[in-house]
Image (cartoon, rainbow, N blue to C red; front, side):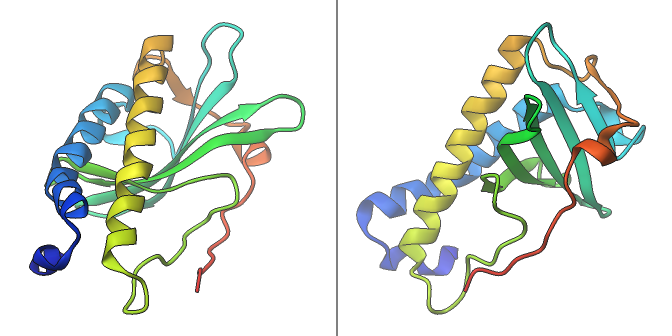
Length: 166
């Protein structure tokens, strides 16, 4: 992507240069929220007062990356909103939202037919929204100390469905 930055519109070029800083800020906020190593369980829940339950689900683990889902489960209807899919890059100390909606799953948003301008703007908006939500969660009192293994989570969280947007 960086080899093509010169071909972008000026505002997009600025966003592209600022994305690594935004991804680092998201990683720092997640670092406060997440327990060390995420080794206790693949599904954790945080309950603060009368608010909705916050669930964290590890989707994939690799040596240098972790892919996870962070979502509120709201009401008797078990609505998931927001529903963030986040990829953590442990070695680079960065994290990015890959999706931020209830319908998502794993979607393909890159390819030769998609303009680079739209990808940069989409990435910027997703990660700005995620950072604001993480700040809100931390202000509400969610933290590594409030996240506990959730044995009931498989019944509460719907299965992940891989999709491809074309």
